[in-house]
Structures are given as structure tokens and as C-alpha cells.
Image 1 (cartoon, one colour):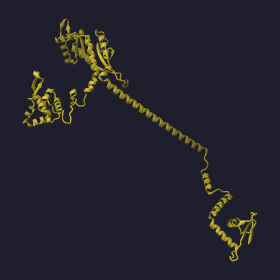
Image 2 (image 1 turned 90 degrees about the vertical axis):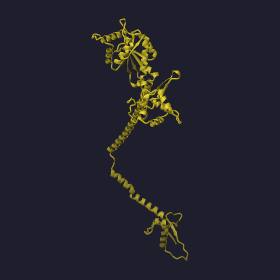
Image 3 (image 1 turned 30 degrees about the horizontal axis):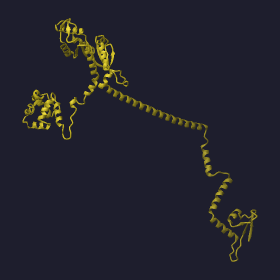
Image 4 (image 1 turned 180 degrees about the horizontal axis):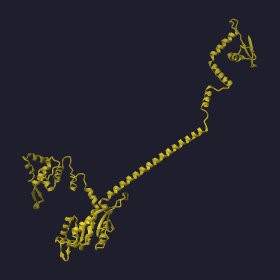
Length: 460
């Protein structure tokens, strides 16, 4: 049986496109694209199945075998319906509605947004510039602090170096009053100072014919021009000295019109210059003479003045001696700070001398005898010979303590060492004496006293 179907069929029950899909096994007749031929050849023994039923069975078979085709078909159908209706997908519609709800951005909002962005960018730039500036200032501050500390360390090192005996004289300036240069030995004095290696300055002094000293700063970083030393050497002429001594004699005789004496004249100078340490120099030869008569030997006059005022008087024979005296005082003034620092110790009882530098003791105990001897020599008025006599009898403190314990009374203990002989020298010139009760008692108190405030010489 053969059927011919065309697109112009008016049967409403037949859907040609669906039929075209369902009948996948049908073949189109060649030569005509719009006519499809379906043939059904069956054997005589096969039961008869109506065409409608067979079409229904084939339709069910195709739907079971190709579900993806149905899915794609439905998807295509969905897109086809959307295109036909002229509307967009739901997601697109929702997005458009959301944009329409916010509304378009106005020109003011756009301008404000740009200004905010520019402001933030400028703030960020300013913050970066400020951080760089702070970092640079901190680096400069640290560098200046390091330079300052370095300069201070250098100045301290230079100051210490300037106090050394071989360097201190270079930083001394000797100030000389012009009136002293008019004396006979002025030229010799300048030559001696130049040879010494110090600087010399000619300045007008309030004390006539005097010499002062000034110590220059070791480096310019300290900001100090120099410090003035309190020492002053004043030259007194022979005539002035004779006049002052004559006034002293007249005062001793009870005369009221005697004039200034040597003591009153020095006391007045001390009152006017309380920050100075004054010393007098007189170039007068062996003795002082007044009007052809010998008044006082110069040693006696100087001792009488120093007892009353504390000012020493140096009597020199020649101007060369005067120049040598000034150079000697210059060295002493220059080295005074170094010696003062060397003598300073942390403990008042520390003996700052060359022999008290310590005694080495090895593991076998060699050297303990010398330590014991030095402990005895720490006592006042105890010489090396006295200490040697004591350690010869008692080589260790333990032996001396044992000897004290064997004594029956304190009087016997205090006089235990009094009969020990102290020998000095050798041969025929040697001498000997005893330790004596005073030193014996002091050593007893030194060894046995438990009072830390015990004064060893209190009961002598």
C-alpha cells in the first residue's frame, strides 16, 4: 500500500513536520522534495495492524530513543517563541529594570566622584611626601647626633691627650707684664720660655711685674678660648723689699709712722686678688742689706712672711736663675692636672705610691710573706726595716695570732713585739734598735680589734 502526502493536505489530524520527524525510516521520492512516500509491505502470515496504530507505535519508539532531540527541540521552541514575541530573556529584563530603578547618574554626581578621586589621590601623594620628608629629617637628625657624639668623643680624647706631660706644655700660654720685660733679665726670660716650647703673651697685669699662666683648649669643638690658672709669680725689686722690711722693723719698735710692712703689703695683695695663688721672687744675691747694714738673712725673712700669709718668697742670685725658676713653675703648672688625676683614688685608705702597686702570689703560696710585710707597712711610721724585723719573728699573721693567744694578759699581748731588734745597715756601720711598746701596741690593735672605727694611735 502506498500513500502520497503533500504540504497542501487539508487533513487537520496530520502534522506534517511531526510526521516528518517520526517517520525517520521513510524515504523521499527522488525528484520531488515536497512528496514523501510511505510503503507498507507485509507478509500474508503477519497480523494486520491498522496504520494509525502503527504510526502511534513508531511515534512512541522515536520519543524513547531520542530524548536529547526533544530537549533541543523544546529549547529551540523556547527561543523561537521569544523571537516571535519580540521580548528579551527574564534575566535581561530584570537587569534592565534594575538599571532603570537607580536612574541615570547626573553631571553633579559625576563631577563629585571625580573630585573625590582627585582629593584621595592628592592626599595619598601628600602622605607619601610627608613620610619621605620625615624619614629624611630623621636621617639628618641621626647623622647630626652621630657627628656631635663623635666630636664630643674627639674633644674628650684631645683633652686627655693635652694633659699628658709630653703634650701639656704645648697648650700653656705664659702671660708676662710689660714692666717685667723692662728689667735686666726680660730678654733672657723670653728666650727661656721660647726654648721651653710654650706660648708667650705680653699683657698688662693688675699686679705689676708679675707672670701668669693660661691653659688653651685642646680643640675648637669645646668652644672654650682657654682657662686662666690661679698661680701668679710676682717680682719684687730689691729697693721695694728693703723698704717693706724696714717698715716691719719700725713696727716692731713701736713707731706709728713706719709705713707698710712686708706682711701688710702681701695681705693687701691677697685681698685684692682672692682667686690667685701668689708667690714672690726677689733677685738680690745672698742677703738683704738696708743702707749698708745687714737687716735679716733672706731665709729668715721669707719664713716669717710665709708663716703669717702663706706666701713663699724665693731669693735668687741672678736673672738667669729667675728665668730658670719661671720655666720650672711653668712645667709644674702644666703638669698639675695630670698629677692630680693620677693621685685621685676611689678609696681614702688606698696607698697611691709606686711600692703599693700589688704583690703577686702564685699557687704554691710564694709571695705571701711579701704581702704580710706590706700589710704591716701600711701602718703609720712603720718603715721597711721595722716590718722586716716583725716578719722575721712571725712570718705569717696566723703565727702572730697564735702567739697572742698564748699570752696570759692584755698587757703581755700589747708588749709582745716591743723587744724585737730592728737592724739597719751592714758591717761596722750597722745599727740596731728595738720595736718599742708604741708600735707593738698598734700592731696588736691592728690584728685583734673588732671595732672598724678603732684609731690605732688614740691610746698611745
